[in-house]
Amino acid sequence: MSKVLVIGGGAAGMMAAIAAADKGAEVVLIESNEKLGKKIYITGKGRCNFTNASDLEDVFDAVVSNKKFLYSSFYTFDNNAVMDFFEKEGMPYKIERGNRAFPVSDHSSDVIKTLQNAMKNRGVKVLLHTEVKEILVIDYTEDETKYISRVKGVITSQGDTIECDYVIMANGGNSYQTTGSDGRGYTLANKLGLKVTDVRPALVPLVTKEDYIPFLQGLSLKNVSVEIYKGKKKLYDDFGEMLFTHFGISGPIILSASSYVSKHLPGELQAYIDLKPALTRDQIDKRLLREFDENPNKQLKTIMPHILPNKMVQVFCDVAGVDDMLVAHDITREQREKIISTMKAFPMTIVDTRGFKEAIVTQGGISVKEVNPSTMECKTIKGLYLAGEVLDLDAVTGGFNLQIAWSTGYLAGTSIDNK
Image (cartoon, rainbow, N blue to C red; front, side, top):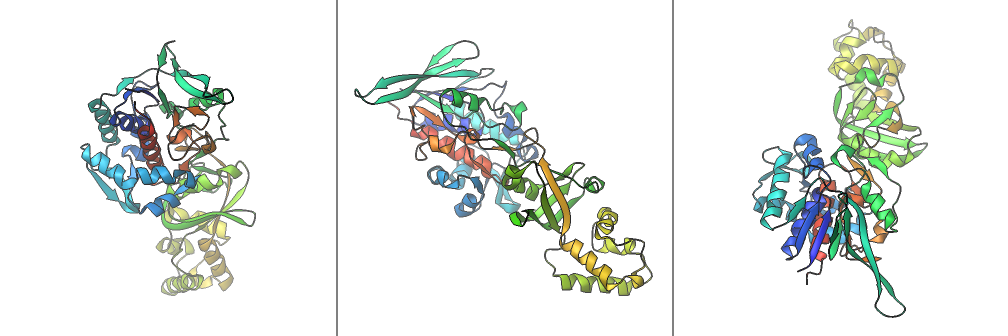
């Protein structure tokens, strides 16, 4: 019976342990925290959007970095297989807006309990409060000319040497560091001579320059579209929901935008919100004229809340350069044009991200060129497998990053040769 050591008790690590145990291996999972799944626990605001029920093509489209690398893992253990797995293991789920899958209970702890029970039922041994300090590798020759490296075991923070046949690295990335996802996997990889690409925060709120944005703090906008430019080059555009904060902007479409624009930050990027994407300029003009005709003696500040959120009106008028004290019948065509232009392109300047402390995932990591995508085995070290966020893989919001973890973890676990 082969012995497998899994480093990391997050989504990829637990799924890898389950898959390896199903192959008949003796599995030991090593986790540095006092409990498993700390990052799973806080995902989806504690509800855990554990995958996405969209067509697999759409799942691929949601991947930001190295989507071609994921063909084998996604097709081996796709989103439907993930949902089936959790249901068979006793966790019912539901599908919400955007095809996002959640536990019926709305408790991320149920996802963790399901994985823990699945490991327990398969005899996986778990070592908590234990950190892997070094992965041991031996070199040998198949013939006189070809040297081969192979894993032999690990050295733990307790000073113990644990020998094994296989190691699966699922250490996580560099985001939400209090959960143990603090870049230690990259240190191990560097010691082994593996290439680690530059890492950046992704799915992270963005910092804006303008002093009027903090006045909008707490305001959530639905059904708006956002475009982000570097000079004349469009970096991103999407439609959905966003949120103003004391430092800038956040919310689903902004978090997804960060995965495409963070490599250009810090710096200055121009962003524009179309507050009425379903309406043309002419339709907005007609709406304004109707409001002004019906309320000829009212001030602009009392009319605009019919069209925009009340909290936004004063800031909007200031940005548009139109006095909100103006009476409707005095508003000129030129002033209407300013209102329309600002409604279709409310401007902001993005200057930075909020960094790894607020990032949901890490962009960058161990280069996928180091890994065989059909098995998740390291190309240069036999018996070493890699899975999850420790690799240079990431996606937008909606359950897609956890799908990457489940798929790569499962493929790594099932690819071991149990003898």
